[in-house]
Image (cartoon, rainbow, N blue to C red; front, side, top):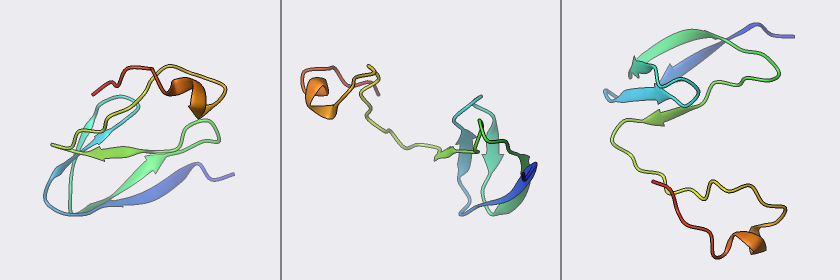
Length: 69
């Protein structure tokens, strides 16, 4: 039933909210809204995460799918 959460983002880098792309400075604590449908997730600036974005029923079906950077 929580409506907010305290999130600490370490370091001096920028962090980006994966939902909306908003940037946050590292080394601070932020109070963010949360819900059962939306948990805060962040990516550190300058990092590339290769992903396979096609939705499949199993990972074995993803073998030939292209990567997205």
